[in-house]
Amino acid sequence: MGRRELRESIFQLLFMTEFNDNQEMAEQKQLYLEGIEDIQDKDQSYIQDKFEKIREKLPEIDEALNEASKGWKTSRMGKVELSILRLAVYELRYDDDVPGKVAINEAVELAKKFGGNEAPAFINGVLGKLAKEADE
Image 1 (tube, helix red, strand yellow):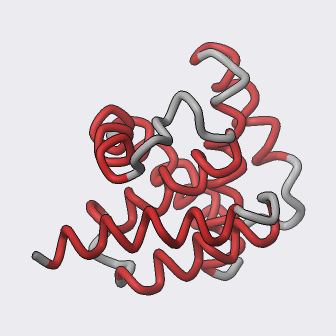
Image 2 (image 1 turned 45 degrees about the vertical axis):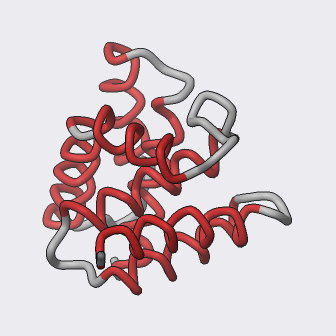
């Protein structure tokens, strides 16, 4: 799988967490991964590891999102946009393998594919602000 497909799978798992508790999520994650045809063990491990690392950082990620998105706290955001933002913020702040511009671009692409008409601009604006703050 390419990086984009891996990222899309992680996004979809993050989206599922909005509708399942921790106990259910373990089963849902397994079912999701079993449903991917011809997935290699290394790709499955990558998806699982990054997904779990993001979930561990959710309090910090959500705090950063709440500070950066004036008038749009995480509790008011759409589940798709929130899941995309959580993945991108993790990549911006905690994943040294992903350049910031790539994380933002990939998040915008996910928003175009899965979000509403306004999602790409919203995602880009929030992540642009977070990236700018990180550079200062």
